Length: 253
Image (tube, rainbow, N blue to C red; front, side, top):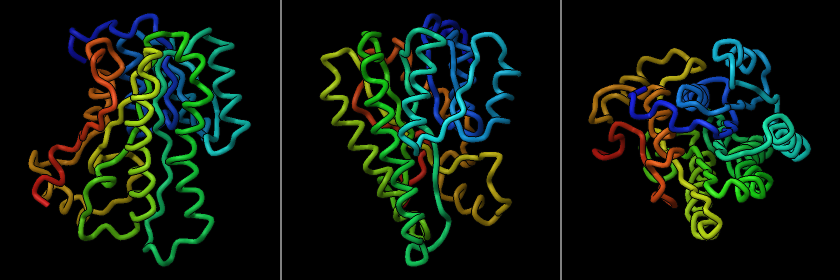
């Protein structure tokens, strides 16, 4: 992290859903290095505990299924009970099924929309009173380039892309509605990004790199740096934006 971002989030409390692994973990670690108290949320306890063990002071976790209303409320209540405030909410939790559209079950379609669109909507609603109290509240939604660009080989992404497109419009409309309360709402749209859970598929990696002008796959830290900027006062005049963090993926499509 560049020195200019040291301690820029000191005194802030951030909650990152899906923060145990991948992009969410990268964002959580960046916020922690910048001085924030960071709470990561997720279904699996082990990666959440690992985050706290490695980061130590100012690191916490809440085990949560953001697709469940009771757990969503409990998560925000726990953050406030333990830390007294909430300034930054990152809606990052993921659900994606890699299968052709015609083979997706009703349950899989419902889960995709519930985790990717319904959950960020409700998490933001539940967090809203606390973000309003902050007067510098910030919501960052993790979208995807799939919401705006279509790869000709995008088998299995129809429902995922539709949900992420909904996240984009949720971001813009909430930015307009919540701006008078001092709350900024933005989204980041990552392109193909390396995550530990990816299956080994060199052909897919090669195809993604071939469509990326900067010539490589993204890393979680590439997205985290954008999230750090958006959460800081350096972005105090930025709201309602969907920022691609993709190495230019889609420009040549």
